[in-house]
Image (cartoon, rainbow, N blue to C red):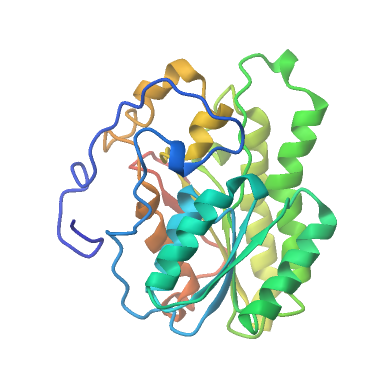
Length: 297
């Protein structure tokens, strides 16, 4: 298996997938996804860029969050894994990979749509890690609704609670722990710029995350805390099959981008590593697009 540092053609680095029509109950599991994702277990090689860092990553049981957690561990960080209790199987797998890489992993299940848990999560992560100097707000909720009339207040509220309000709450709690030199990286999306008609509530939260990240970056910069964001394109994760996409659209998922294929979670990880590492010390308030070539601001 080639790693992310090997010279290779990005078109063919990973195969073009045509996922079969499939469905999982929300939030979905990597363990049951067809085809399986590449989260970097075998393909991510670390170079010590995050040696000694202590990171809390939300939604790090599967998909992009799992790939980021594995990459952080390979780069020398210990990781607190935040996830829903229903995702225990995936979370335990990621923890095993992290520990197999010689770093510590701490499992913290709970629902970040609960304001009280957001505070508990941060405090427990800081306690178990022995401090906190890297935060990745990655957890997200995406439910496709074809007709706007069927988009209920309950769904909109739940999506906003998970995707953006939790970020406000988690950052607020984290600032008690984050020292000078700490970093925050938030996950936004290509949907912030090119909203799909069946993802209007999700896309709205992703645009809000962009704005939140840029404003927060300006406020925290004088304190020596850097804030940035990553905007993924079509990445193959359990989010897509747990009501995140119309089932009929799955076989063509990701084929519309210039590279001609969906991305794998491990292809996102280097962006988070870069924005968390000291080498990006002059990068603040940036949104790094990782989307297979789709033009974006």
